[in-house]
Image (cartoon, rainbow, N blue to C red; front, side):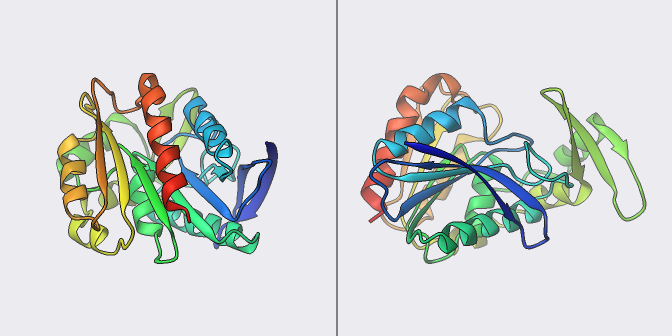
Length: 250
């Protein structure tokens, strides 16, 4: 397996940084991984996932959304991350990949569903955001972070893992206004959703509803005692994910 550091531009001209895992027996199949909220591409579980896909002759692109990891600084919002993922899809298509799958975790799941187009062959979601949260929850989150208001660039600073993430206030409006029916109705391929039954961040009921309203063949795998991050359950999650892509990226 070859690991290649790559850079590509978003449609807004920002530099996005990623790692391209290329298996020895390279095919036209690739999976693009979208990390969660205020996170990064280099989390151990995402690297292990990419390695597992390489073992099945599937390439993988892990990349940092703008404002995260090694990519250009930016304000974080759902719409900006959708733009970044669409740019990543264009990047791999330009490199000649034909059979494209998407993997999104948590907020990356919401971004994945929004960036999906009908040429995408397969999707897997880990504990995804698929519904709206009550506005008062978002207001409470804003109040719990450092408020920085500068004219048109109103944002809050979210401190996580030793880094300051600049969250546009529109992000909280986006989270409070998700239209689950519209979001799910555009999907045309079967989707695998993996969700822990001990997740105290994203309700399991969201994923149950999602799978009931996704195309025929979609499946929900409930991980017993699985937390939101599913870190200690990767021994189950990674094989489920890699086998799904091996079967559906054809």
